[in-house]
Image (cartoon, rainbow, N blue to C red):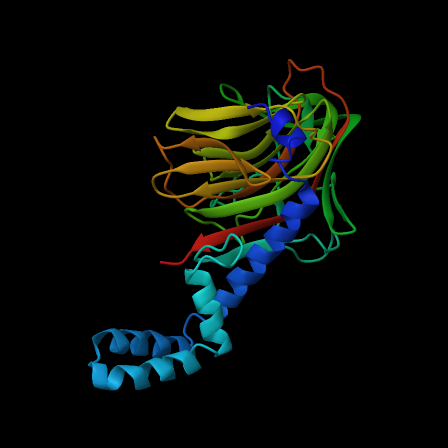
Length: 314
């Protein structure tokens, strides 16, 4: 999908505006979750039904009580929500968020390498068809609230997984990283968003996955030239290539995942809907940079300002 004209015509709105709306979305979700069990809302809903069922003789008095109860802050927020007056509000709560204001050696939600429940399995490795060695978190930093994964031109010898030969030592020409938050988060369905930019002839990705290769849901994947979004599940899937935007500038990439549909967006513009073969198992977040063996390659930088996940209230 080419977003050039949507950007020129103002349909694709600037990231600072979308980020302000995202903050409103986050704030309203938190406020609405906090009042979900409010006695005032319960009383209002009960009284609302009583007004509808009351006789003409008592209706006026009940309507007056309903009007007074409608002035309660919790009820006002409730009425704004059901009336669609809260920007972009959905009946969701924040299930995970990271603004990356942590120091590298301090406790945080992310771990380098791949994740397996079996703790004896090797986690820090690359693949035989890649040019970079995943560097056990040494290429991952945070700076001024921005996560950075650096792909550097430096030779090293490290472990690589080969489908026939298993783990073998390999000489790599670059180093980079993969990190995941499996120990802190896994979720089936929800809304996922991240503010991302990147540079270099390097593949950069923010995606959902599990212990196995599939399902694999790319919320953001830069292939060294263009942004791609999509998924693979049971050896089939769907995807879209995004052009008309500059990946070195920040955009907010999003995914809404339900049991029946996957919807991807860039700055709240829907770019892909998929309704078949939808995965429905808990997945966690992964962020990485890599260089396929047949690509030209080079140094690069992936920057993630923040990531957030919301879960639907049931």
